[in-house]
Image (cartoon, rainbow, N blue to C red; front, side, top):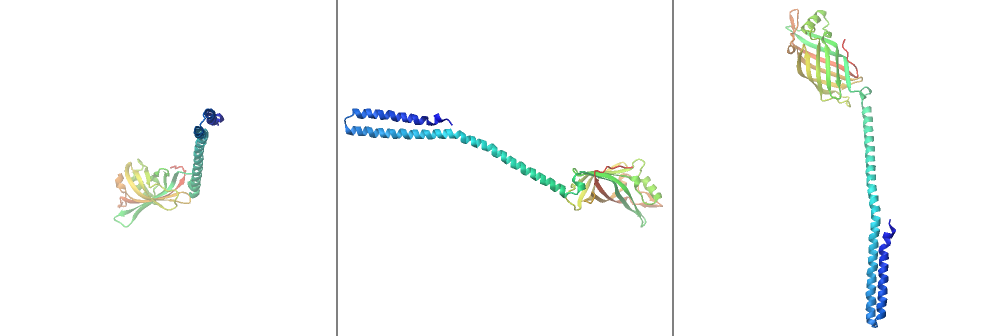
Length: 283
C-alpha cells in the first residue's frame, strides 16, 4: 500500500483551507461594515465545508484504489485455488469410483475368469444322429476331440473338428463314414464367426446367443446361424449348441450300409467347457 498516495488529497485540502482563512482575515480587516464582514465569514465557512468534503471523498477513492488490487489479487488467487481443489476432489472421487468398480469386477467374477479374455477347449464333445432311410434304425456317432476358442472381448470364435475322430462304435461303419466325408482331401470341419450378443461375464445364468459365421466341410463353405447357449460354470464357460446339418449342401453323399442309406440330414449337438488361456492342440 502506498502511504504518500493515500494522504496526498488531505494535504492539498489543508493547504486550500489555510489559503482561504488567510484571504478571509485580510478581507475582514479591510472591511468596516459589520454586515459585509458577516457575509464574508459565512461564505468562507461554506467554502471550507466544501473543501473538507472534497478531501474526504478523494481520500475514500484513494483508499478504494489502494485496497482494490489486493482484493482483486485475493479473488484471482482464490479462483485457481478453488479450481485446483475441485479438480482434486473430482480426481479423488473418480479414482475411488474406479477402484470400487475394479474391486466389484474382481469380486463378482469367478477367479478363473477375472484375468482372462480368451477361452478355449481341445476335448469338446460332438454328437451326430440321423435316420436310416427305409428302416427304424438310427445312424449315430460322436467325437471328443472338438477344439476351438472364443475371445470374450470381441465374441469371435473358431472351432474345428478332426473328422477322423468321429466314431459310430462299429469299425466297418466308421470306415464307410470316413470315406463318404472325403477325409483324405478335407480332414477337418471348421466353423468361424461371432457370438451375438456378446457373452456377459457378470452373469451366471444361461445366456442364449446366436453363432453367426462360416462353416466349412469337404472344401465347401456355407454361412450358418446356429442357436447356442453360454454359461459360466465352475471351471470355465460351458458351450452348448444344436442344429440340423444337411451334408448334401457340402457335396457329401449319404453313406449306405447293407443296402440301407443314411439320411442326408443329421442332427448335430456340441458341448464343450471353454477354459481360460488353454492352448488348443490337435493330434
